Length: 115
Image (cartoon, rainbow, N blue to C red):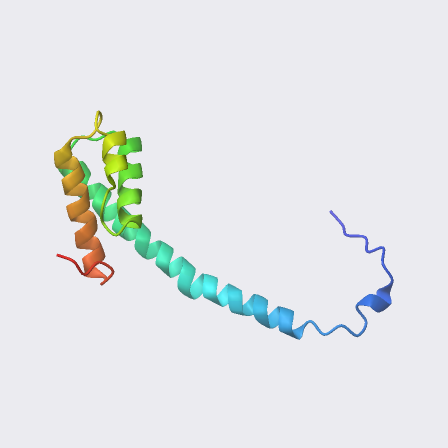
């Protein structure tokens, strides 16, 4: 695949792209230093909660991953709507355990100060 520039070459002759390149480098650093680290930490918490629930309860995988993701995204709490949505496939005991484990993992990193 080739790019055939059809404009006049003088368009870019005196153009200074320094600020654009600096911005791109800054965003790439942020992606590597912040975004990827945060995503890795989230996946670690997710895996730990999933493992704890799987060791104790038998919950369908598609329901479990949704509930754990929602719980971690919502500061360790499952909304009433989600409880109602999954009430026929997940018991109240499991909801409570997911919240407890999610809260524990969030407290470990200081993002969930409530006991």
